[in-house]
Length: 370
Image (tube, rainbow, N blue to C red):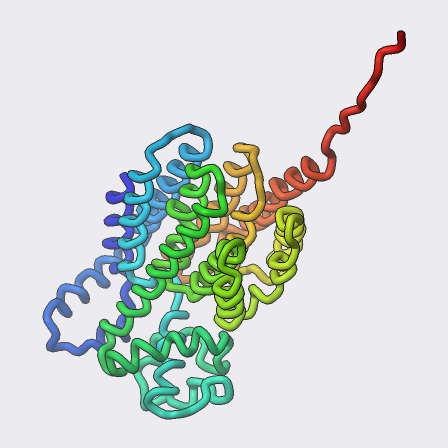
C-alpha cells in the first residue's frame, strides 16, 4: 500500500515540472521531449491530477488513523514501508514550492560570485542566471541560518554549479537523510511505536512539505529532536545538535526553554505548543509552517487516540488547499472556511491535554474510627 502511494506521488509530481527547468537542462538531453509531453498532459488534466493528489493525502490519513487506533507489533515492516515511502517522496518533483531553488541559488551566489546572500538579493542577477526563473521571491536577501547556508554550499563545491539535475537531486537526498534521522528521534521520544509511525513516517504533511517540496524545515526539526534525544546521555552532542538547529532556521531558538525544563519538559512543551499554535494562527498561512509543531508534538504525551485522529484530520483539511493550487495555480481559493476550521481544530487536542494534566484527581486517605 505504501509503495503504491509513493509511486503514485512520484509519477503525479512530474506532470507539474517547471518549464524553465526544462530549458536549463537543454533541448538535446535524452528524455526532454517526453518530459515536455508530460507537462502538456498535466496542463490539460489538472482536475484529474487534483483528485489523484486528494486520494494520496486521504490514503495516508487512513493509514495514520489505523495506526493510532489499532495495536500492532509489526514495527519493522512499518519502518521499511515508511523508508520506501519517504524515498519515493524525496524523488518526487517539488511542484508545490519554489523554495528549494532559492536554497540552491543562494549557495551558488557564494560559490560562483563570492557575494554575501544576506546582503545581496538574487534579483541583481536577472539576465545572467536562468535559476531566477524558477525562484519565487527574488527581491529578498537570504532569510535562513548560516548552518543551513553552509550545508547548501557543500553539494555545489563537490558537484559544481552547472549540473542542474544533479544539484537538485543532492538537495533532495540531504532532506531524505535528515528526515530519516528525525524519524529515528521520534521513535525514541514516543513510547507508542504505532503513534510514532503515524506521526512521522506516514504523515502526508511532512512527506509532501519536507520531502516532495524539499523545505529546509526538515533540517531544523530533525536536529532539534536529535538534540532532545542526545541530551539524555550525550549532552555535548545534544547541545551541538540544538545549536545547529537554531542556526539552520531561527524558529527553534524560541523552543530553548524546553531544553532546560528538566522533569517539567512535557508540561513546558505542551504550553509552548499552545503558544506556537497562536503564533501560527497569525503567521502560518502556508502549510509547511505547521511542520514546526512536530518539534513539540513528540514531546507531549497525548494519550487519547481521538485527539490524535483530530490532529491528523485537521492537518489534512489545510492540505486540501493543494487541490485548489493544482487546478487554478492559486493558493487557497475556495478553501478559506475549511482553513480556519482546521486552525481552530488544531488547538482542541492541546487544550484537552493541558486540562487532563492540570486536573489530576486527588486521592484522599481516610482512616476508620474505632
